[in-house]
Amino acid sequence: MRSSHKLGLLTVLGVLAAGALSAGAVGLVLPAPVANGDFRDGGAPNPAEVELGRALFFDKVLSGNQNISCATCHHPAEATGDGLSVPVGEGATGLGPDRNTGAQSNAIYERVPRNAPALFNLGAAEFRVMFHDGRVEADPSFPSGFRSPAGDALPHGLKSALAAQAMFPVTSMAEMAGQPPENEIAIAAEAKDLPKVWAILEDRLRAIPGYAQMFEAAYGLKPEEIRFADAANAIAAFEAAAFRSDGSAFDRRLRGEAGAMSDSAERGMALFYGEAGCSGCHSGAFQTDHEFHAIAMPQIGPGKGDGASGREDYGRERVTGDAEDRYRFRTPSLRNVALTAPYGHAGAYATMEGVVRHHMDPVDGLYACDGTEAVLPSRADLDSVDFAVLKDPELLAAIASANELSAWLAGEDEVADILAFLNALTDPAVLEARGTAPETVPSGLPVID
Ligand code: HEC
Ligand code: HEC
Image (tube, rainbow, N blue to C red; front, side, top):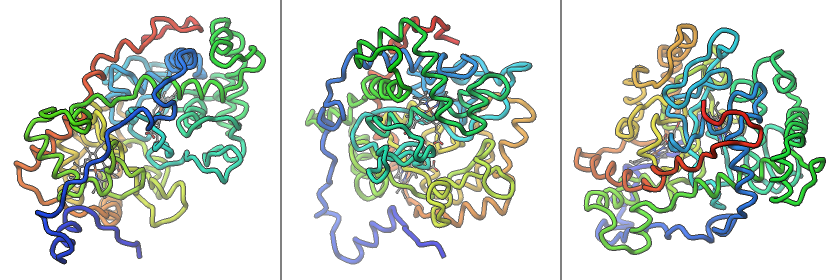
């Protein structure tokens, strides 16, 4: 039997009915405003480290075939995502929804199984768990300070979970490494020899004069001393600085600016942090408890290889090995959520309204999802597996029965207010963040697809 953690409106009503609280007496408890002290760098990033990280983040030199960078899937012009349900990795060309599936020998082998999340505010110290299933996590009981798929092979000296995360995309064949025998990184990646992948990349970076100079400026390192962990720390410093995003109307409201939010957004915020129960999971100033919940989110794309079909994604269970955690995924932060479509861990919902309505009746939402909202460049063989889970009644029933989110019984006005609040989480600076991209990178490879 799985334990039940029903959260949401019904819980709140239950508490009210029990007389523990009365609606009038409940003062709305809002999070404290975001402050410099919430960030690991205290709001004062090291400029040389950030510049190095910026170059690395946009440089295709970190991929096996030198054809994709971190920015391809996390582009500032796409609100640090890629605008697709699930990404099209190395081999393809183009950015955002215009990305293709690659041609001839570069045709992609498979899509990447999960939606590329936005990267806002990950420099805040409370973000200690990375990925939809939390497989990279700060944990002092490990020698490196982090639990991760690399186990003891993860190098020491990584400064944060965000830096530890940056060790991994380069080791993924579909994302950045490529298919063997295309290149030596792909061969090492297939053999799961992660230290070899990192060593090859270290050699590449050491040989590029522009990087030698930047590693010297950021960390005082000679070329032969450069390690991939240093590159990961710099990438994290860039992500933390460039994608800090606390200038929304909601932030101004928390800082005490009268009239910062519309009346509708005010009502939506009261619902969100109050009777709608959203903050039971989407808690705090960044709207996440950093925990894992099963909310019957539809699964599309190739899957993570779970289940008899291999098309499923067991989510948190993949990390803990505990069947209780099946279909649980991390509560996403909702900063700039209006800009980060598609939604859900596999991007099954094209609109913010759609995914909010999913929360109103998760099981109905799951069964109503037919995949037509997917944003994916079409290719017949890829398409044929993308909707396997949605077409399988047994798998749908399993996802439905794992659901732990109570239906949120709201009227149309309340939905509109919640959406107004979610729109108030947009930081206007994000819309101008295209300037984050450098014009050139030290490898000399093209920055734009
Ligand atoms: C092909 C697309 C692709 C590329 C290239 C890529 N990513 Fe990602 N990124 C993803 C996907 C998909 C996920 C979610 C994977 C998961 O949860 O299993 C992700 C997750 C992340 C996360 C975790 C965010 C969170 O909230 O948990 C960070 C940080 C990140 N990527 C940074 C990077 C960096 C840095 C690089 C380059 C070294 C990079 N990514 C390259 C697609 C990509
Ligand atoms: C039981 C915990 C829980 C509650 C309560 C909850 N959510 Fe969620 N929410 C989640 C989880 C977990 C996800 C991601 C699920 C997945 O991808 O499988 C999510 C996803 C979302 C997303 C999509 C974000 C994205 O980037 O894909 C939005 C928007 C959202 N929730 C809004 C709300 C609102 C509004 C409420 C209140 C009406 C609410 N949530 C209540 C757990 C919860």
